[in-house]
Length: 428
Image (spheres, rainbow, N blue to C red):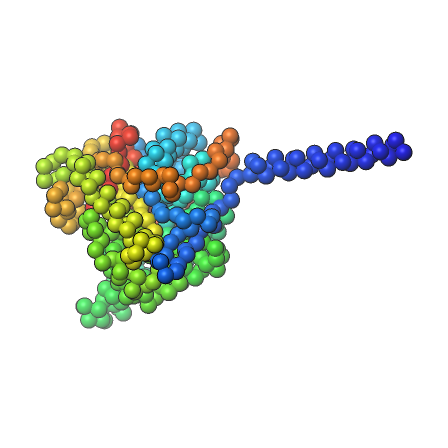
């Protein structure tokens, strides 16, 4: 009897120990990938993350030392370099109320997870779908033909592989396709040239948006839980988007109209009936008329833009389809004007083709000034995540997986060493 009692007590102790072990493991398990969805009713459309309303206070974030250009890849650097960069940059974003960043192909999944678990910041992952060229049969094609069956098959397969690589990664907010690809419809073919000149651009655009639709179908086949958006240049070709992209969850758009986007929300609601997120927006901090920084003017534009986003969001009595935006951009893109020369010079050349703001003149690619975020942004929109006590595990290999895997790097804009913390800018 004593022996049986001893065995019973031993069994009970083992069960208790096993249960305690399971609880300990559960308490240290990394955060699950967020549950992201669009909720729509008579008050509008809103984004929810893990059941909580989520207005995107986003940033086009990138990191680049002075003297480097698009060939530099933070993610192929030693782990201590990456951790040092993130530990300096991410708290600044947190303090501003940023809850999401935009990243192109190239950031390894482990760092998406690390940024989410350590800083509570999600990532919108962006594949540019050949926007800056593509390699086909070993040859670089700088301006892709979206009607080419071979390109369509190759890029779709690449994106499906990309989605499968990231789909279970905690911190992924949504999938984003393209970056103003509607502004790069320059290829020529016998079919296109046979059309009247006034119909050629629209014909090219139809191939682009039908490709987006085909890719979206494939993404939803392998990852039906996450949302898919495109990054369009303003609302150009929105009627084609309505015809070709019925499976789209969110319209992402790069918009530089000034303090107000005027009728954009109404147009998107009437034509598409889906929410809209600004994948780029903002204003310069450099006054090209007076040749000086003008951060007060930049702040005026940013405050007005964020105010309108809020007013047009869910339940405010207006259109109700705004779900936030990503300021362009976090850093001075010193390398962007010459791309491969004068990389260590803060060139204020006003190189954008439009006239710029009436108050600041022509727009520049490399300007300085901290972006203005709405007050109270962090408390209402930045989720709190437990900070792990150990570094993220996994491989740091990701240097070959550059923005795009099969193309030249997307021009994302990076961080200059001497401009911390006041290095945040927005492109016009």
